[in-house]
Amino acid sequence: MSALGDNAARWMAWLTGSAAQFNIGYSQPRRWTFLDVARTGDGTADMDCSAAVAGAYNLAGLIDPFPENEETWTGSLRPLAAARDFNVIPWQQVGNDPDNLLPGDLLLSERDSGGVGHVAMALWGDAVGEAWIDSQGSDGWDDPDEPVGDQTGQETRQIPYADHPYTAAGLWTHILRPPASPAAGPPRAKAAVGRRTGPLLGVDISNHQAGINIASLGADFIIVMATQGDWFTNSCFDEQVNAALALGGPVGVYHYVDGSGVEAEVAHFLDVAGAHLNERRVFWAVDWEAGQNDAWGDEGYLRAVVDAVRARTGRRGLLYASSSVYPWGVQAATGCVPWVAQYASGDPVGWDANPWSDGTWPTAGAIHQYTDAGRLPGYGGNLDLDVYHGAVEDLRALTGAADTSTNTTTASNRRSGMLLIETITPWGATAWALITPVSGAVALDPQQAQAYNAATGYCGRVPWDHYELLVREAWQRRNDFVRALGGEVRESVDTATRKFLDAIRAGRTGSDSDNRKEDK
Image 1 (tube, rainbow, N blue to C red):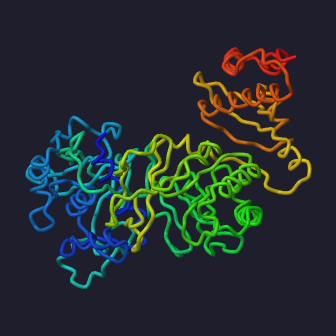
Image 2 (cartoon, rainbow, N blue to C red; image 1 turned 180 degrees about the vertical axis):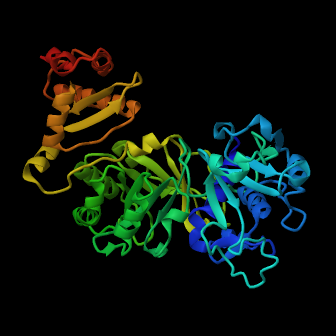
C-alpha cells in the first residue's frame, strides 16, 4: 500500500463523508473552493470530481502537486498522474472486485477511451468517494443560482464500488495507482476513517478546545485534560471524553500537577475522572510542567502522585513532560509510558507519523507530542498533535475497568499490594498472574483469575514483555525480602522467573508454578 495513497484516501473520505458538516457540494464553476475549507477547517464550498481527487492528493503531500486550475480535468488526469509516477492500469485488470483496489486508487472514466468523463477515489473496503452532481442534476454551469454546498447529501458522497452505476456498466477505463514508495513530501494529513496498526496519530485537548468536533480530526486516539491541582476541572471534560469514546479508539484522561498536595490532587483527579477510568478504553496520564507548578523540581512529589494514581487504579499510565527536562528516573521507577514533548519548530504542521526528534530519547513504545501548532481539517485553531510508536493493542493494554471507589474490601486488598495481570502469550493463549508484595508471582487458571478479579480489582491486559517484567520484579522483591529477614536465597531471580514462565508455557497454574517453597 502506498502511504501517499492512504493519506489521500483519508482526505477524500473526510471531504465526502464526515465533512458533511461543512456542506461541501458539487459545482464545476466553484470546483476549487473546497481547498480553503480543507485548509482552514471552516466554511462552505464546492468541488467537482477531478478537483476533488487532485486536491486530496495535494493535501496529502504530493511533491509535484496537480495544477489547481483548469489544467486538471478528467481528460488530462491520466497524463498528469503518469508524470507523477502513478501507475496507469487498464480497468479490465481490476474488474468488478473491490479487493483488487487499494486506498487512493483513482477510478477514471476517460471519455476519449470509451468512458463518460468522471473520476472517483477508492477508500477502504468497498467504498468509493466522489463528487457526483449538483442538486439540479447538472454540472453547475447552467444554474447560476445553485446554492453553495451539498443540498441533497449526494452531491459529494461515498458509495459501494459494486453499487456504482459505472462499475455495473463497465464504464471505468483506467486505474491510476500512486507509487508504492513516494519521496517524502510536506507533513501528511488524514481523515476520520480507518484504523492503523501503528504508528498511531493522536491529539490532546482541554477546555481551550471547547466546541471542537472530535470526529472530524481523524485521530487514532484522543487524550483529554481532566483536572489541575486540587481546584480546576475542564468544563468540557465529560463532553470531550464521550465524543472521543464514540469513535471507538483508546482515550486518555490527564491530570496537570501543580503542587497543591499529593493526596488532594489525586483525590480531585479521581473524583472527576474516576467514572471514565472504569471504562475499558480509557487510560490515565500525569502532566509534569514548570508552569503553574509549585512542586516543579521536586521529582519525589511527582513520584508520589504517580504512585498514588497507579495504586488507586491498579494499572500504569502515561507520564508527560518536555524532552529537555524529562524525569526519566520517575518514569523508570513507576513503569509509566513516556509521553514526551519535543518540537522541530513552532511552524504549523499536520499529521506526521514520523516527526523529527533529536534521537536522545527512546521512541519505541512512547508517545511523542511533536507540535503545539497542529492544524487539522475540521478545526481552525492550533492543536497539540501526538504520535504513538506502537500498535493499538499496546496502547489499549493501558486501559481496563478498575474500581476507584472507597469500598473497604477492595481498598484493603489494594493496600495489600496484590496485583492481577492478564496477557496474551506469544503462542496465543491467555495467561494470568497474581503479583504479590513479597512472595513472588503465582499463575492462575481462569476461575482463579475471575475470583481474584472480584476481590482485588483488575489491572487489565498487558503486553507479554510487560508481563515478564512484572513477574521478574515480583521475584526480585521476594529475594530482597528473604535477605532482609536474614534468610538464604536459594534461587536466583532469573531461575525463578524462568520456572514461572516455563510453567505458563506448559499450561500449569497455582502451586505448580509457585516457587516459594524453595525459600523455606
